Length: 326
Image (cartoon, rainbow, N blue to C red; front, top):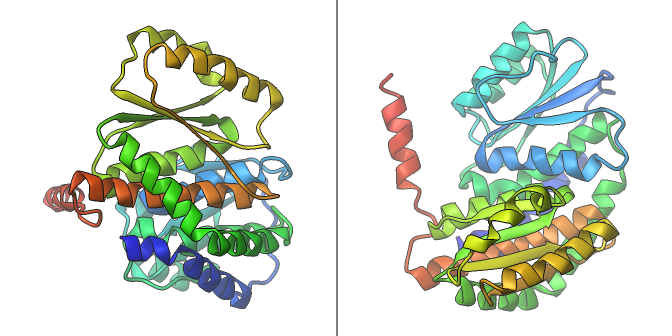
């Protein structure tokens, strides 16, 4: 997994080349968008929706289930993202969306989803296969932005922003790795609690997913300002076993920044293990990629400290085998 994380910017470069070569006639205008995907293939939909929220006038919803919302109809663009192309929840959601009259675009490395796209002449971006889906994030997230541009949901600035992120990550790779190593060492015996602004919820979800899959650990996250209206009241039961990780940005609302500052004093009454990481970059995309890469490295080091295999996902394989019997 360390080699795969180290290849993150190479994956982004490769993805940008694939996106540049993808030709699609001007996409049919849509009134709403549903992005279907699970796990490492699904988190990109959440992140895309949040990155476009400040300028896209079409509502974008991410779905991670077998079923889809009733609003899906002939005015809906469904983007199906399954790295393997065989994710059963995504395939069933697509079949339901077909019945509800939606139009489609797909991202995959092959499998049944690619077959469906080719058979129905849906726009399809094919990415290289052979990776764990969570390690293919760099390949798929770029294609989501390419499709968003093709269907007039965003402008072409995203490509420049991805290139800026690549340049920064390459130039500061050792610094990022050192920060990730230090954090992993300090939280290896703690339960991580990740707090961030609502626009970075997808990034916090990625951290939680990677802590689970790479370092075989549990964590939780919540966002500001929502957590101030409920979870904050639960902090009297906090303890030294918790490690709070703030993921902050200069795009955060000024009142959110103040809320984080004030509530940190509440957490410090229960645990001294408070860590803060500020995103770097001039765009939301750059900052999100910075925090994602930091989190990916942290979970690889956390796996090393815990003595676990960061690649292994035997329990997921077992579950798939059991489900195949029904």
